[in-house]
Image 1 (tube, rainbow, N blue to C red):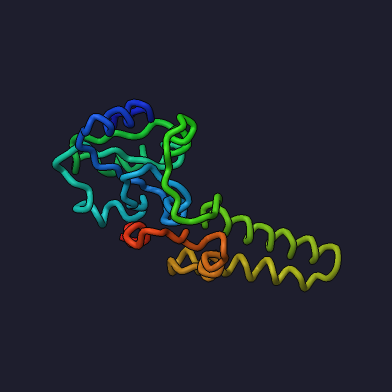
Image 2 (cartoon, one colour):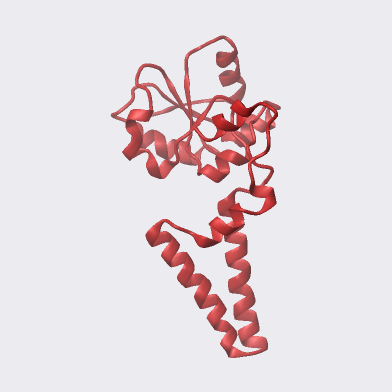
Length: 185
């Protein structure tokens, strides 16, 4: 069973030089929109296939937005790592404590949230127009539903790819070229 650690205690341990491996289990887009400094990104769905990326020589602190996915990850790591901590309240609690976050995009919404907004809006629009204007608009909702189904099956989402190219989702430019390289490693 993983133990929890609050944001201020974690910050104090890091400031004291404690060796901890910080692992953010959110999606790439969520990670880019703001993460605890010093973390590396290991999306929850990749944990089992990337166990060797999680060091066994030091305690692991799992981080997500609120702590729920980190707790799920802790269960998946049980039996593979002995010292696993979950950041209580996740990056939301870290930010609420006034602690710094690193952002590599200017977007404040995760890409997955943007996809849900766009897809949901198109489905709603298609169904409302099919009732109010012309029944053929139902095909818009069907098209979006088919696209989401294919995205889930293939792991490729053209809507997310398109949204990722919008200006607010592009990586922030840095005066230090190594900063930009680090966000992609």
